[in-house]
Length: 319
Length: 319
Image (cartoon, rainbow over all chains, first blue to last red; front, side, top):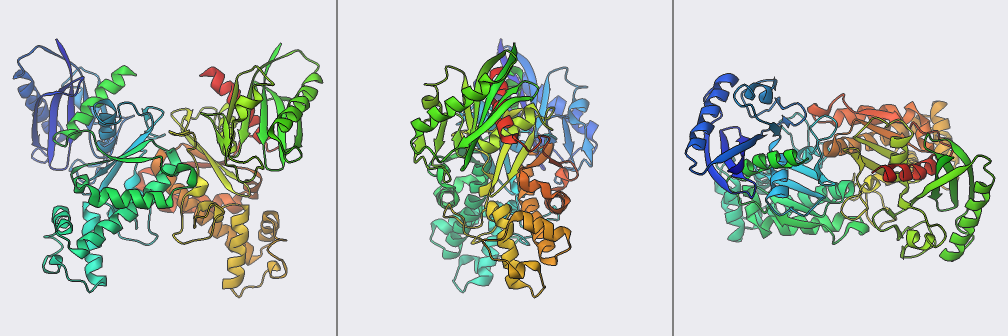
């Protein structure tokens, strides 16, 4: 009998799920729309039947040990999703309480970046690390902090919001109503904004002089940089500067062994790793210099979020 | 037989020590010069005899369980004091290894702010808190972070250097060679610099127009503010702004239940607590607002550093 955990990653558009064993092998997976069922109970019923459907197709005998969930604004202590701006369920959703009607199993929920950190710890590059940080680079910037081998949830379950460090007083507007948040600079949407700032500031030619803001994607910026577009190259340099400077402050907090950059956008590789590392080092206090590794995630990207959610089960049942 | 711990606080000028029981009663204490004996071994011999001297005068029977040490740049993992700028011993001093020649007892060393955090946890206002932060306000700014009931030492033993967060790019010069560190703004020396910036910028009258930089003390600034000196009042407002803004970023890291302000300078009371709290709240992400307490230390100031160092023994022997 193979012991497995169900990992579920709730995103703004899709909810993905997988049946994962202790070694991180995904025996089956699938996804449903997060938005099709407006009512949370209809959604949960739909999710339950989708999971049962893939589970039934696994031929080897399995024993489900628990369910791990990653969700934006997920609160580990309460099992709730609270005021998630990109989900249609409003206010505080008691997700675990509601989903327990369908499964009489240990169930753990946290935010998606925390789930990624636990995935890194259980299956990925942080297996032997007690102190590390994961930065998820997507449309926004999420983070998960691990200290003394434990995830940092903080007093209220919401610790690790590095995307909302203020890196520029009176800086760029953020959907939260604040200004100058790290994620308005260092994220897929942030680098787009940097491109447009550079197009305005500089007189350099660029392929982006014929592209609208809504047309522009982070992938286009990586491709242009690789072809030598100076505006795109400068945007990566600045993004690495913003991120590296912020990470130097983060190191002064928890002094991690490594910082993992995770998510599709981290695939820009040296374009983002090199300036991030360089600017972090420039800003570190002497006692921290040349000690902190900046690493790519050890989780393969396909299903990484689902893997992280499933890892939460192994981590918590072990505690 | 009363179980006691020896607490030792190594400062730039004096080294203070005390014999403290589990409830935080100090049965005896004393201090010696840190600078009189230049050689580390001479100093340790001197310290040993001074401690033996006060211990021998305690009339009740005692049993010494261990020795706790707080020192600038103290490294918990290695028991070393490393490159402490205000101590005359150069390089890396293997303090615990050397001092063990004099005492065959469990011995723990950490930096002074971490010792203060442990004192707060064992004897002070954080007895029932698993997640809190202590900020020590003195000539500089030190900090100790507690997460999941454990002190954050980080990968290398040096975590919790919030005095070296960069709050202003190209800001004030710091003895570390960096610029814009929090402690160049929010500390006794920082507020002096703010006074001089305001004297230059403003045309407001102030009693400090007749005071030199070297004459000015943090205490004079508190007293002037209490008498209504507008430059002094504005300096406290700005200091609270710098500190509060930085603490908002710290909350985004570890989401503590409370932040304690500790040290002589925190005695300025509402002059510093009120603007710090207000500016922190202004800058917090919505999910953190009105959750984090800013509190005075629960340790009385006399011997607080010695108490913290002694608490390290109870904390570590309990682990």
